[in-house]
Image (cartoon, rainbow, N blue to C red; front, side):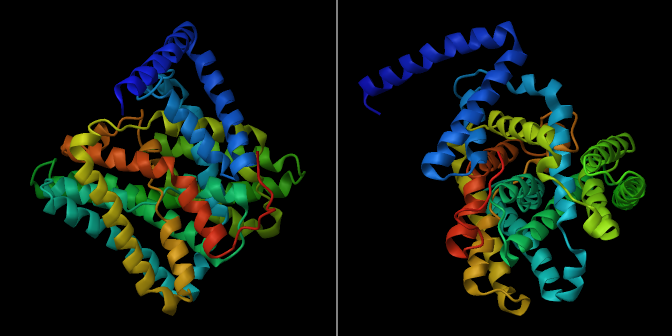
Length: 422
């Protein structure tokens, strides 16, 4: 950038930073409220003028308000809000569960193979390339497994906004749920993979047993949550009551999962699937579980933007680029290899591959007490983890475009006049 242009940019940034910093210092709640208001305004303008997803506006405003730019909100300022943000994530995960059809995996075995293959291929591709570029092998493997996940939150929220109809959108939901579950299980097994606990066989068996407890405990708790919602729904079937019952069950299941050391994501996913199987047409899930959930979703995506980081990008860019490109190629190879046997055309396979690209932070959001990654991966190489965070930032900020554009422009599953939630 020319010196004069750089000086003007620095002056403009400083002009904005000082009043915004003083506003944040006077009342962090007021600062967050201003950012959320700005997000709503920008998102609406982008949608009306450029037909861009509203979610993109929320993410961009959060990124602008982050410490990397204006510094209106610090990452630590989000920690007190984490219970509400977790609730927004939980509501979207439950809704995702209500839209999954596990029977589809049994009826179409190639779809099940595609679900496993795309996650495995992406993980192996990312891990192999990072190791080839000099990353520690155990850290490269962990990052590969985590990077294989597609953000179920971005996927679900984007599809709720544009309401697509077609099998690519249905497969996108199924695959994002499966690879996110695999990523969460990988986090639970990280001490075994990295050898942090030592080479003791009893310790390793204990960790493996704990992982099995988490899996089956989460499944049982999710089943119980879905059965409870069905039982309550039979006794309180007023239309205005159902969203309240759903929200109450979501909160109860998530809190119990955390208290018992289980996976809230798996629990809520299974609860949603169980509720849909048992209740069928009696289960009417409102987008975002009603207006309060929609407001929390705006806060959630603003928070995603605030958590954006490009720290050390200049030194880590080979690893960042490797994660993004290897992940894309790995998923593409698996999707195209299983496309025709599973019933997809080449055009649909291409659209599905692109729509799977938004990366996920949900594996951290629902297993951590704060927004820090480091406690979740003890012993992992700091540089590799930072490269993962930068790659996640880039793919999350552009996530709504990756999700919506292929469905609209490549396979035409989104009508131009499709209803959009606010």
